[in-house]
Length: 320
Image (cartoon, rainbow, N blue to C red):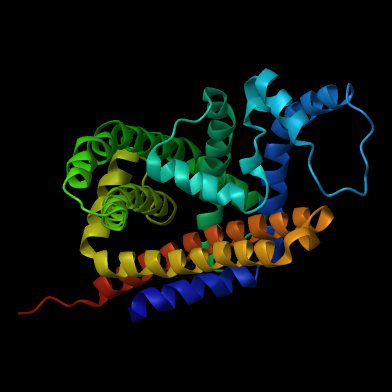
């Protein structure tokens, strides 16, 4: 517990001392999202051009226009749904993940683009966290490009394993298994808790894949491994040997994330129309920045935990 807590707060302090790093990652993320947003925005503007003038002082959305737009939308514009607004977005993402709901195929393009971006960034970021100080742009990008091919391979392996889990384990758990449990359940409350239990079981598998991929990238950056296969094997071994510390760090970060999401939802629900318009946009962007900062904190914490475990291993003396 103390090792994981030390790693977490050490990683948090490292990120707090580097606001420019958080700002830079935020700018890169927005720059990557901008082309996709522009495509959707142009289609929305084209549709609005045929509508009556909009009252700029109104905080309400024309539901009839939105329904008509969704009926004729295609490609990325088809993702312009009510679930993208405010707190509904993270809830929709969580619901889709837990239930394995299919997403529009077009989303493969932005998801792959962001996956490649983070595969590049992690090499430099983990090098920065290992150094524990500012390293400069040239060393940052040198480390990023050096680790990029291996990180891409690690991400592809993790994506493939997750896909197989959804096609097999998820289909069985929430198909015949849940059906059999629900048939024997007397109340809807008991059926709900049984479904939650299955969510936890499946979520633990997804979390395990995510952790192995994370520490595989740490091995690439901190141990100098260049083979994705070797990094994944070494990561799985590390996660197994230090399971308690790895799990505790994951739960600590998860608790902060849940607090962040809950705070976002509470502010939006309590504020109601007072957080509409530019306030709603500002709140949403603040949530995104907080989520990015937490993601960086988790990466820095994993590096510190990895180094702490390596130091402890070096201190172990063979007994005669």
